[in-house]
Length: 341
Image 1 (cartoon, rainbow, N blue to C red):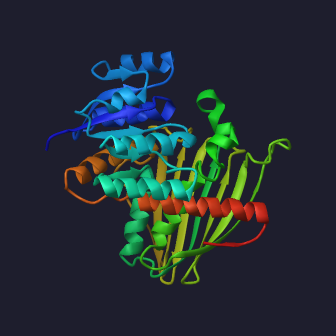
Image 2: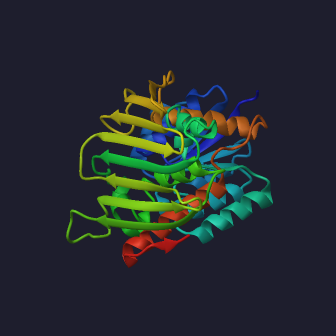
C-alpha cells in the first residue's frame, strides 16, 4: 500500500507525539510540519530532518502532494484551521475536542461530506487494547445488557499549554471538553447499540476561589434510554495518572484499570477482570496500552480507512456527539440541574 503523505500543524507536547506516530507508521510518511514559534520549528527540524518546516500553516496546505493533515492545536483554533484543511482538499485528523460549538462541528462535517474527504477526531481511547477490549466484551454479550458504567480519572493538574492557553477558558471552552470528553465518548460507545444518552446531571468545584471556571473536580451522571447510566468523574487535584472503567450488566461485570506516572508514559501498568456468575477471571491484555500507543494505532487506522481498507472508528459525527454532551454537562453545572440531551 502506498504510504499516506501527511502534514502536521502544531508541534507542542502532543503534536510531537503525533509526529512520532506518523513517522513511525508503516502506512504514513511525514513530509511537512507547521509550527508557530521559532523554538518549536527548531525542535521539529531536529526531530524530523526530512520534513519541510513552515512558519505558517497556509504554506503547508499549498503543497499539492500532501494527502492528509493532522491538526494538534489549542481548541479555539480547531474550527478555523480544520476548515482550512478541508477546503484545501486534504483529509483531516483533528485532535479532540472537535470544536467549541456544535454549530462548528456541523459545518466541518458538512464540508467534509461536500469535499468527499475523511474527517477523524482524536478519540484514540477507542483504539486501545484495554478500553477497546471492554467494548468488544460488551458487544459479545459477556456481561449482558449494560446498565451501569463508572469511568473515573485521578490525576495531576493539567500542563499550562503553549502561552498558557489551557488555563484561558475563552480558548479551552471548558475543562469538560479537555479530558472528560474522552470519558463521555467511551460511555456512549459502550452503550451504543443498546441505548442512547438522554440526559446529564453534573457538578464541579475548583480549588482556586478566584477561578471557579477551572474545574479541578468534576462528576456527571449520563442517563441512557434503557434506564442505564454512566458516572463520569475526574479530579485534577491529585497525583500521577490513574484511570478506572467499571461496567456492569444483567449477566456480569468488567473492571479495567490503567496507571502511569503521567498520561503519556511508555511504561504503564494495566489490567482487566471479568465476572460472570460465580466465575472471576483476569483477561490478558497482550498489547501495550496508553495514549502514546493508541496514537500510533489511530494513525494506522486512519491510513487504512483512507486507502479503503476499513471504516473510521472515530468520525466527525462522533466528535460532534462528544462536544454536545460536554456542553450540556457544563450547562448542568451552571444550572445545578439535570439537562436533557
